[in-house]
Image (cartoon, rainbow, N blue to C red):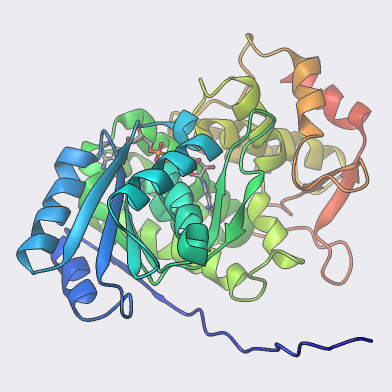
Length: 369
Ligand SMILES: NC(=O)c1ccc[n+]([C@@H]2O[C@H](COP(=O)([O-])OP(=O)(O)OC[C@H]3O[C@@H](n4cnc5c(N)ncnc54)[C@H](O)[C@@H]3O)[C@@H](O)[C@H]2O)c1
């Protein structure tokens, strides 16, 4: 006997991304106004660098306005994005008495937003969450799009959920306290967006990239808006990466592997920068990019103070092996997405943007780099 449990549903996961300066009052207004539905308690999750300058002031404003909130802090850095840290947060939240009627407020960079979104997705079988992004990288990429995850010893981001936040706040003023190296890391994802879908953004960066380090308001607002527009044009068409969304992985097949093999000595954006160059060199061989276009991408990454070659301490064979742990490997075969010149992607057929690459093809490029 078969019972059919008919559970077809239409879900509206739409949400706003607010880009601006010092948005903590706005966040608290929204929470008081019911942004997270009936949530009666809040878990503010942050890391120990972001705690004092941004998360504690937010917590204070929340409690002053009568919201019941507790703060949960993780050690800063990629090594905190683990299943163990997720369990630690969950246990701490449970110990504080938080249950299904809570909501999560993530305040920090991509590590905090990726981990918090995953915690929120499974805590009490799912509670609402919001992201308050405090790095350029999370503003450009990590805090928007609904991908949440943790790393494992094998590779980055292998375990996670698609889980959309109730709202994302991009507070450009917080970039002023970011170390320069972290700003560069965020620029890698910004340059990636120019390469894959926004030639105007790429050319704007060619004219203005140094101004990002000078905290030029107009430039930072421009890149924030363009980053969101590029990402959302893609995510709105393919939320769960069944086709088009794959293009957002430009540079990430090699990038993720370099990041893991470096044991996180390379920041995410630094690793992505190397990955973008590996893709460009490979793509030039297939005729997808000209030598001139490859050099333009390299020059822009270098002006953003990003590495474009693989550090000597990374063993090329270990790196080539690591490529095969990527989520995008299908039937044991590597898949790459490629730029078509600058500002477009190569589309192979229908909705297929991935191309199978042999170990020999990529190993030759890694040896050259
Ligand atoms: N979910 C996605 O779609 C997506 C996309 C891209 C990247 N990511 C993930 O994002 C992560 C990288 O993000 P990230 O670079 O923001 O990492 P991060 O959260 O580790 O932040 C970088 C560093 O800056 C510090 N910091 C944060 N805000 C600060 C501020 N305003 N002033 C001073 N210091 C500050 C942090 O404590 C940390 O040391 C990676 O785990 C990557 O996998 C996710």
